[in-house]
Image (cartoon, rainbow, N blue to C red):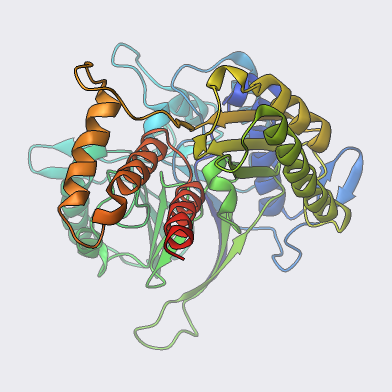
Length: 453
């Protein structure tokens, strides 16, 4: 038996990111690019036809959507229209879209149905979920009249199981679902897929809620392919657990995860060696708006004038590099999203720092969709006179300096080590990207080396 399917997740239609309607539309454009690949056509943008991921050829036999089609539970008419237009393209091409409900689109308790169920009633989705009983899960086949069921067979020999988002109870739910699958007759089933909206522990350091891999193992003897969503970072574990990543960036931190966006899976149950995967997987990378994130350390800029001169040169240099990428065709030509982090110690009064002027330089250099400057700066003033009440920052500085002074390795520069520790703490609490924190640490270490030279 041979089949081909597309696996996607975390579309997040309706996200008005940065308050820009262009970003609202970007999420629909990304979803349409995925649909284009599913039906086997080129992506069209700005009146011209362009090819992307040419090594991946369509069409597919069915599509799996592993949750979070929408960004929020309460959607507007335009968002619903975006979803319905794209899903109709699949239906008109005879390609079923098999989906589960994610955490962003669960129905409110007082609602009879959610928007995913509404799309299923419009015959645009096959929405899977298992009925919970006192003894576990009851797995019923998809009922076309009721528009519900726990599993669906898109073609002879293939069975797709589905489970909605279960949050903190996912591990328990997986074990119960595995027991229910084990009890089902499987006559004629050659290849099985399990779809749910959940992450795997350890795949994203800053995201809680992942299920330990050992808990997923309960499905190992019953399922050939686990199709996940929820974590926006792509990953594959042991050729069995798969997560495609988000087609568009829901935050600037996601921009570095490339390729990502969808998976094309080719199944051939007749040629695989014993104990090996009976599928091959290719990751797709649909066109998306460029994001750029930079950090600039202010420690050696003694005045506002020097800071603006040096920062302008830095921004213009980064902009030249960016436009060179545009010229060689490696990036989408749509205006980028740019963020600039100011880090380190500001050697002069904060009131002299002109954020608006810096944003103007960013806009002039990059011509971006949006440009943001985020200050993670510390004041150079730490010392206080005896008898003065201490602020929290000053108290932390005093305590840390005292602790460092007790260690011979750091005693000579106890105050500076304390300042470095507070600087790193401030960056982490402010949500600075890892590279900005590393740059800050490197700057402090370099300063210690120069002082000892």
